Image 1 (cartoon, rainbow, N blue to C red):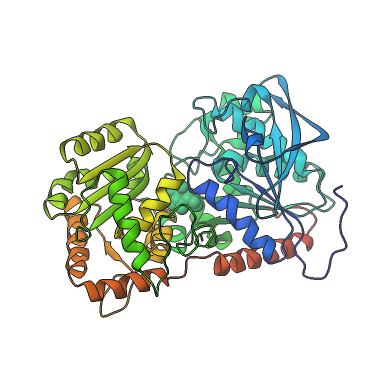
Image 2 (image 1 turned 60 degrees about the horizontal axis):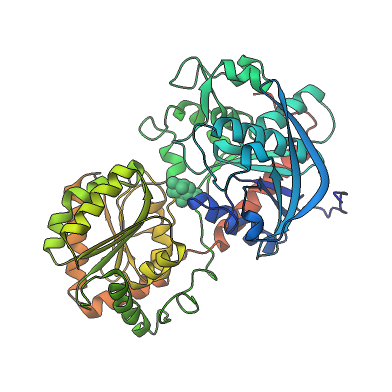
Length: 495
Ligand code: GLC
């Protein structure tokens, strides 16, 4: 089944893409969207992509999964965990291998703190064992959840020091989560503590750091926008790993995310009450009215409707919005918020909705269909993030003609340009303060007050480049470079 195919000169070997989330099977945030769409874009360029992900209970209801006669045994904390393997195909045709273990992943949840360390460390080991069944190619891990797979593979190459090996790629979607745990745990995972220890590079002495180790052993590291790739090399954004990232800067790539522009297309999206495109915006007017009705907002076509579709998390800067929200709504702005996460933020927004009926609507939870109706009905989308590796909300907003009002950071800075002199596609602010956010809103309101100009802006937003086309070419180039570097050496580079 895994026989090496004839390899053309310069062809990309198989890429095993490891992710904790893969939409539409499993999704909590942007990682799921990326893992569900980037491999398809690469497959369309001829890259043999294979996704490896946990088999969370219930995903077999979303896609037919066939059990394979493969069992993986991995040692964990003195026990042996067995993983079974199922195979499925995404709607895009990309193959997915789902690794099943009832004890660890037999619940219908993706993340399950505080068990995640054990769950994902075991999964990563199983994924590394599985990767050994494939001919040498590229193993591409995402975030701390799967970074340990690279560390295992690297160690096994080190042990053998000969023969072909997989090239190792790690993508950082969010540096705030690193898989940090106590040193004692290293031994229970089967490592000597020093193998995972990183005194030199990190801020918590006496801990192991799985993401840091992954960054250390990877042949290439990517993050999800060019600006974030620069930012994480500074103490302000480096989350304690800026020194390590500076050390590996030659191997660090910043490639912005894209979105699936077929799925996210206001001209065809079946969940919208009306469809539209950049030339014919009447459908968007209809979507706005329908959204106002659906959410119990006053059905006023002239009120600027601001959508917020977000995880409720300090990263996203929604506390900044809370601080100025009274001033924002005093200017007649309507707010439609959909999000899940921090219960305290959720309660604060809910209280606000209760005291501003008709003007503020808050839905706490996860609802991908309502999310698209918000993007279609909203005039602007707000992303006041403190940091933002890429951000997908502004990309979807652009696609649906909801003009982004964003903080100039990470991927937001790379994808949104200030509207001025008929150029640009949104509004930006620099300081992470309520006042700066309010000022950007004022600029948006001023243009909104000039309907002809606003239409030009909406059109420009909708014509912004948000697809995977360009980024997938960059990943292709990256895969080519690591594959050719790998085939020109037998043992891993000594660092
Ligand atoms: C994380 C980041 C977000 C990024 C997404 C996908 O959720 O916070 O900025 O867009 O990963 O890469």
